[in-house]
Amino acid sequence: MVGKGVELADLQVMVEDFANGLKNLGINDNDKVAIIGANSRKWAISDYAIAHIRAVSVPVYPTLIPTQSQYVVEHSESKIAIVQDEVQLDKVYPLINDANSNLNTIIIMDDEYSGGKDNVINFGDVFNMKDQVHDIRALSATVQENDLLTLIYTSGTTGNPKGVMLSHANICNNLLSIDDNIKAAMELNPELKPADGIERFVSFLPISHSFERVGGHYSIFSQGTSIYYAEMNFTPEILFENIREVRPTFLTAVPRIFEKIHAKILDSVASMTGIKKKLADWSISVGLQTVPYRTTNRDLPFVLGLKYKIADKLVLNKFRAALGGKVRACSSGGSALSKEVGSFLLWNWYFNYRRLWFN
Image (spheres, rainbow, N blue to C red):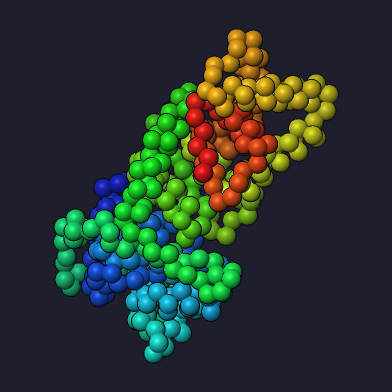
């Protein structure tokens, strides 16, 4: 899963070169560009490049059926669609010849694609489109806070999807509102900080959704954290392998993911026997006793604190290893997190707990 990383300065050059290519393809202020694909570095480059030139990104879920993808691309009046692979390409390609559609070009992220279809460009070729060289950095400096940044379409469960208009100010205000929380969270449990000092994050929630877009894309990037992308089409088992491989220091997930973690650990305890089972049950009991103190930012009483240190050394640290052993804080969003699972996260992960950020 983990490939060669990209330094920030190199990433900025890539974003500006890709943005220059988009300009040469005719994208101007307020033009719409759809992005259809799973979380990836190319998705991020596309998004930042679109923002740099005062254009508008239109994220499209790669799980949508062709008619749904076509609706979003057509309704948003997207001129270009940046697609993950040939599967996504085939979903929207009919719009190229549709008189009712503005779509004139499709950029495919899979640079091995050689299908030869008209109006289809490989992602890598966009970086080299320099017939006209634009000052992208100067152009990005002209962005106004009320400029439209993105159109995020609803699921459409009660009718056709609706495009939600979010400006640069909308996103930036969200980032500023959670910035202190994330910084405080990342200072939790300093003994778990990576030896190389690099904070790590695994992006796996759909980046087309506003929760991951803000909390696991813009926000994490603005904190200077390294972002790793989970394998495409992952199963829960593959996801947990990816997480253990990266050993993230911060984790953003929906309640269902935390519920799976909780259930998996409890199942492992239930399968134990003898002294191991008694130690695990005792450690969990001690952990639960700490919750009232942690939720009110109080220090643990001496005896309970001593018990907790023993429980952590014997058992609880092994629970944390399920997520790589370096997670210091989590964010949960999308729906309500149960009190049982929230308490489990609280006493198991944040044994120097000061603050927990739950959306």
